[in-house]
Length: 384
Image 1 (tube, rainbow, N blue to C red):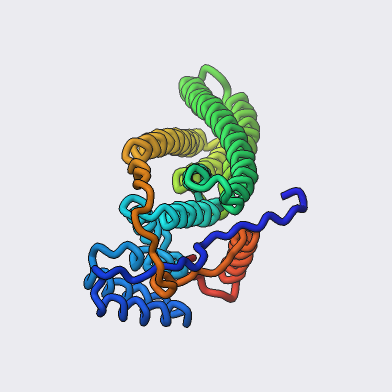
Image 2 (spheres, rainbow, N blue to C red; image 1 turned 30 degrees about the vertical axis):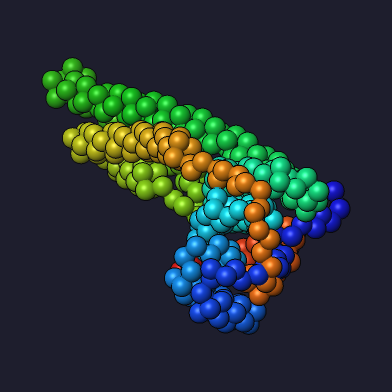
């Protein structure tokens, strides 16, 4: 971030409000108790307490905000998002709406940060949504410097994500070109293998009909055996290329199957060459045919892999389009506040955090996950 520390608050500040007369006394008590639990770091119990307050006074907005803060601290971002949206849509207090939209941006920012290692496109979408939320904050309060700085940090993060997406696309294009070239190589191998098998059959027929001498047939078989050995080397080279193209962390079953088929083909080619060197034309031809079958299976596996990748890409594009169509509309801005809310305990304060701290925390957690997945540790069941 150009060496400049851009501090932005990613949770709400303490908001002073008053228990309104319509609130039940039991609800106010539930909120005070929940606030104590929140300050003690018992966020799950605090959320349950705010639930009780909401049951006692369903029209109360503030317990929802507090509960959203609790879910944020529990890292249950989707629950927090839903509650912040509800607060922003229903509250008549513009200060509370401002804070709800601000925290909503924080949720999407944090969610996008988490997704950077697993789904760059969704990470990008979350960052863009975060910026949209913070812009709405500036629409309400243009003097909110923290929201403006949040946008600046998110834009830098978006630039990094777009760079990674472009790099990923280049790698995918390179991989697709390699896969296409491998398939072309296999087609040539298959044609050459079938041609050698035909040559073996023709030589055998000539020898059986005495069109050529046994000495000539023996020499011809040796020549075919030499060509068969050379073709085996090409098959092994193709097998090595497929292995190099595989992602060691996420191997593709179809690619693995193709590699195994080529290994089987190379074994049959070696067997064919040995038999032809011994003038066993029938045995050599049989091994040649089986080698051709294995190459054909490898080619089919790679074609299926390519089709699956294309279908997966289409499904992802369709899913992204549907999500865009189904994305809930932004809450309408409520009217100007009709009443100031005044009691301090009604909303529990969330910790003051910076974007750099969130990113640093994510990096540390990533390093911890890598250590846990190294030999000597068991994989964790859940990252967050």
